[in-house]
Length: 289
Image 1 (cartoon, rainbow, N blue to C red):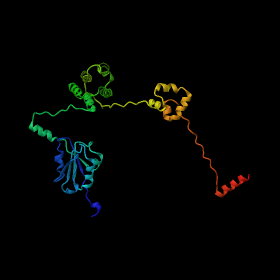
Image 2 (image 1 turned 180 degrees about the vertical axis):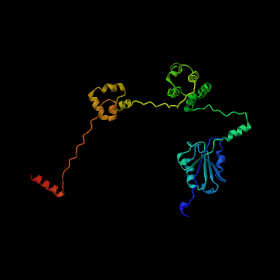
Image 3 (image 1 turned 120 degrees about the horizontal axis):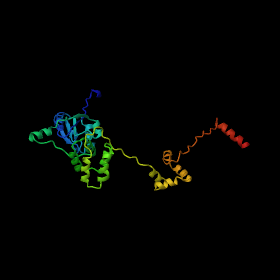
Image 4 (image 1 turned 60 degrees about the vertical axis):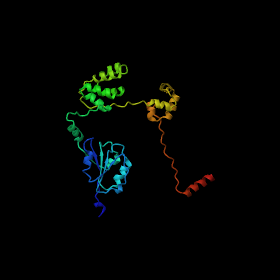
């Protein structure tokens, strides 16, 4: 049998949220698997039969990357890895796996409904900045927005920076100029929640990072701490000519010093020398003269 006839079994990466039955579905790919957890792998892989298979659970929680890669490279049987998402899986491990989905059906919620039929779906108030701003712009339930702001307590400067990219600044003038840092933080969140009524249609714009001036760093390179002093010294012709020797063309244009003079390329001097004998003859003639 040649090497081209060897059948290679590719590992399976099974992703799905908590309660979607990842572990149950993983056992359908193997017969009698040995189960490991990604953060605690300390076992002799050579003693596991190829027909049994291996299941590595919860690779999204501090995985032992080196040992997992060693298992993927050496074990010849079926390996199944579970994770709640793809982004938490290391790239080296993800590239070696075949990705499959566990499905969107949440079996854990169905079990809870059988035990408690009148129970409500759990609701979490925790939000990151993007999710909080998105719900602030879209949701018409302003009381819920007020509760989310009071619970998460985002930075007022960061929150207004995100909102000013998506709401007209006139709606935020009173909040920013009269309420922020003058009244209590709770009152600021209450006023901000009802400033906008929701129903935002469009794409959420991300705040853009401001561009910083390079002139202060150029002043420090020239040995000057104050930028105003630099502008005064640039009026002197001698200082301007000295500064141009320390900066490149782009930096000179930034300080309005003009373009630096480019060195002219001179053609190299070529000496015609046909042979070593000819060189020696010229030398003797010159000595006679």
